[in-house]
Image (cartoon, rainbow, N blue to C red; front, side, top):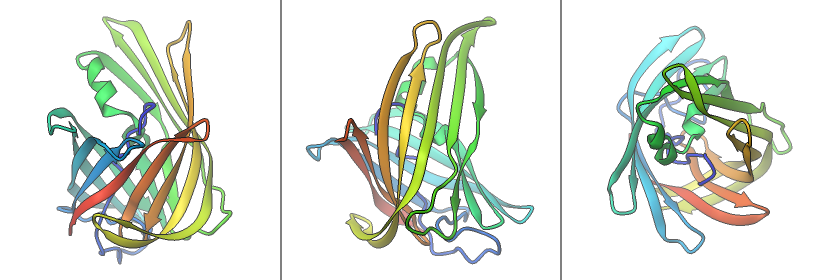
Length: 231
């Protein structure tokens, strides 16, 4: 997905979800690996990511995991590496909003001082059609030598469970819950550039997100699929 969103860092695949108090939609076991591939509207590969849970630990009423993600272009040329934190407490899974940033664009700011203000994006364990979910946001301020050079904000709003559907990806066939939401990305301060989009994501219990689609003005811009999983 384009427009400052990164599809390639939010997929987890494992059947081990029996930890007390954790959402059934995401495993948090160290060593789990999963790959995602992003395509344009014509089905041509644009980028992919190789992801691995490199650390997992118990926290109060749940678990926390650190995921390493290597993003590559369609020719397997490395674009960027990043790490993100995900946690599950009291039956609610929370996604680090930094995972929604387009890491290929973020690599342009390497070497700058980056300040991050963000919320976690929640995914409850009991998704039902018509259910409204908590919004999220992330704001980055990039600077150098104490001077602000660029600001970037991504707002996720109107999150809702659309229903359930069975879908197939290269990794298998999955029974999923569908979550939709709106996205507004704002870059700059004096003359901000705003980009509005929307997205749909398919989540399967014990697997995580297996497909996502990006839209702008109601037209499909691209999609991402889970292509490999190692438990």
